[in-house]
Amino acid sequence: MWRPPGKSVRASSSTRSPSSILHLLAKSGEAVDPSRNMLSNLTPAPQVCRIQGRAEAIPVANASVDMVFISMAWHHIEDKQTAAVEIIRVLRHNGLLFIRTCTVETLNTYFYLRFFPAALRISQQTLPARQSVTELFQDSGLFVRERITIRQQLDSNLFNYSDRIAQRGYSDLVSITDEEFHEGLAQLESFCHRRQQEHGDQSVHEDVDLFVFERQ
Image (cartoon, rainbow, N blue to C red; front, side):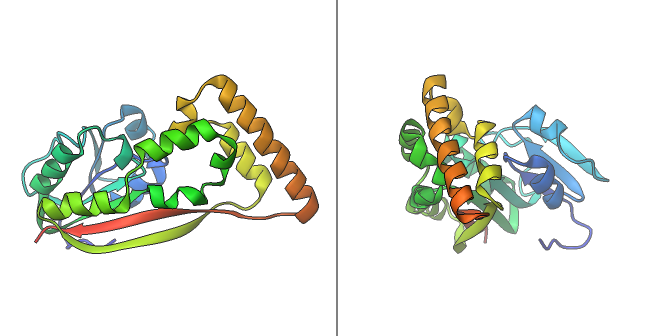
């Protein structure tokens, strides 16, 4: 990430790993997140001020932000139109908005959803389509700089992957019933164990979309 010398960077982010992403984005300046728990888990860094706030009402001044980074949280924002207005309000001229998110187009790369049909239905209903994200900010006046799909390695083998899913850390898994979760988890663990025994270590990858917009 580049920023002009002497300027602070303020990141508005709600993420599954705030200690890694917010710490990276806000080496100096201010980190804004709606979750007090996520802010408290942020890895300590010099000159980082934690501010609790929501995307629909970002508690910073007009045209004071170099960059807004929203990671794996766009689908949780209830009023996206209001959030878009707020993001544009706080961005400086030539300020950048990054949105890292799952979309309906990337769902087929999330292997665990094959074993949790109820979670799949929830994700299909809640995740945005690529076009909806692009059109919202284009219509709000931002310039589309780029949209790329990033394939990322989640785990180096299926045992680690099934352990990750067993933590039930994803919002779609939290939203299903305990019975649906444990039934799906048993099927997933059985598949991963059998596959691991037959083929050895196999890494697990997922796709995420990254949108980049600019205020001109």
